[in-house]
Length: 519
Image (cartoon, rainbow, N blue to C red):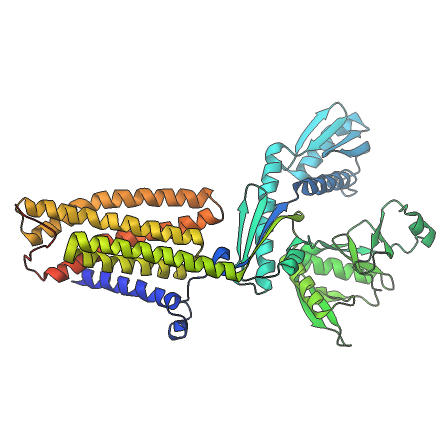
């Protein structure tokens, strides 16, 4: 008895989960965690962006970083300087010559301790070459893709965009779907920025004539202002504080009620920032974002504690956007929008209407067939079918699955398979009754002997759905999600709920089953 009550309770709970989806405005009568199933891009309308991770730029930056690491390791004064020459970066391969042959082993050991197993190292005589292998590059791409997806998600979530779908596609691509977003331009600008912030000292010894000539002294870069690209700031190439040390950033207002961005560094960044502002009072330092100078203020006094303020004539929205960029972190590689698609809300509404009509018509035909063929048991099968539909929608809403047009197709397919799961025990019951078995016994035997076939069939469908989810993308995944949920609800409703309702209908008596014609 307790088992039957538990089955009824689960079925009622599943149906209640679907009420907010089918009854607009009913959400206010339910707990907050019971919500309508969210609609996907093809049903609600919105924007879709396909982004490509710029791996060429990433590998170029990695090679430059490797060049700097090798140089720093060789001239480490604490461990002793290793004399070298002809240090160069040639298409991602960093090479140099050790001047003293006795230092080759020491150079290799020092580089090994600094770089570990992150690079391949080769030596020929006094020449040492370092590069990234194909396997290491593939790992870099996968790591950059995973980090980019997470950073894009944080940036979009910070904007308050509801129910975004962000997933990898095809190795180095990211598919971003934004239901309900009509104008994706602002989001494109936000997620497309690398947001790599660094702090540099300004080289005050560079003359205007040198800037005009465009020939920067060694160790100095000529960078333009972000808002005034015609004005150039000569900054030292050395990074004093990296944006990787940034712990938090928020939009705020200064004493003059002008929008600014406040920054908070971690312990390492705070120590470097305090050292920078203490040793260079009355000098300028440049705040550089993606190769452009945000501002180049004068250091008036030491700034301990790791808290700073960035001002630059921001609008309030500009300050908020920059705070989001800095707070979410720098992208490991630039992202390029290679495809953009916008679906109007009207088209989405037409899709919902068409999909709903198709699902309802299919459901009605299935219910009519079951009623005509199996009579009273057909009525029970129809009730179970409706409960199954409600549970699919309700469980999708509970798990936060987004309903798409392929998802509706998955529901319709599931209902068709659910009919098959009902037909198997019904036909088995018919065979048992024809063999002279009493009705009550025939029902028990029919469900018991057909359950294995139903379970095998549904588990096969579940395996296929899981494979589609694992290796598919976009609409394929939406189809796989609803199909997976449908398989589980079908097993519950057809193997358990249907038996409970039939037992209740039979009432412990050997009633005549209308669809069975005995000889």
